Image 1 (tube, one colour):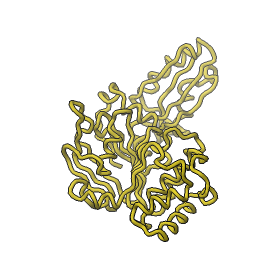
Image 2 (tube, one colour; image 1 turned 180 degrees about the horizontal axis):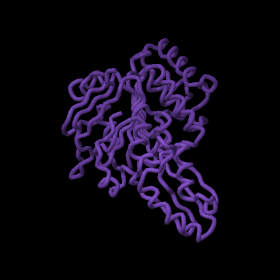
Image 3 (tube, helix red, strand yellow; image 1 turned 90 degrees about the horizontal axis):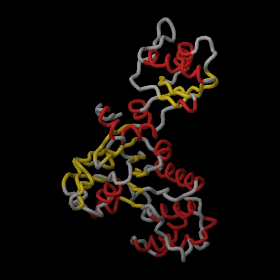
Image 4 (spheres, one colour; image 1 turned 120 degrees about the vertical axis):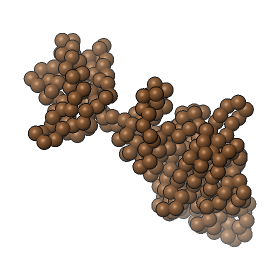
Length: 341
């Protein structure tokens, strides 16, 4: 599929600070793409460059097929940008906000009214359309903000940039916004999302890029990133101190080799260390997550079933990926090429 956003070697500095360092991106048309990274990683700067609000010092990018430097006006006609806080007028009604935005975008009075009504229905705001925005919940304001970015003729907005759109929202309002993003994507709009909420990226994104210090640390689908950079873990709690000592003693040799699950199937060996917490009498043992491997580990660690009081399986998450990639120690160890799945 053709890219909706494509960037090559984007670089940007603010004074002596290198904010972006030869960043490459490719976002497939009609998908939801998430850009992750800690504070200061360059997420907002990337969005501002791609939305033509600031120019890169070096590199090239095309959005909706247009060059962000030489074809700025064409890029701007093809995109919508929503920042961290809803940019709506609280002294107007929802319908008035949309009609005003539509008129400013060049629609006639009649076309603006028609488009406002369509968007209120699309974003489930029809019943609240005549209420002042100051009475809206956080989620309603954000949905209205998204709607305002789509006031031009249907199909005109090809790429929507959402810069940390759920900042400050409660869980219910966040879920409402997620639903709206899914609907946008299903209708064919490419969504470029920056967020620090990893659950948000996991639920919404088709592809993810993790930034660190302005550089790409990894790119791939959520599943591919979790498979490559994170591990499942079997968390065990020992019955007492003696049992804990026996389990920790047995854990190291077990995880240093493959554990046989059947005569013909073996679980892969792992170099991930066993984690221990003596005060809590607990330890975490890496596993591939399969039921067969978990059973094999339990058999190897506690064959007589006398030492383990309880156990839980920790499934790899994007939190694990994020921590592994953005930790300087982990980066020094994990020198694999970023996944391009």
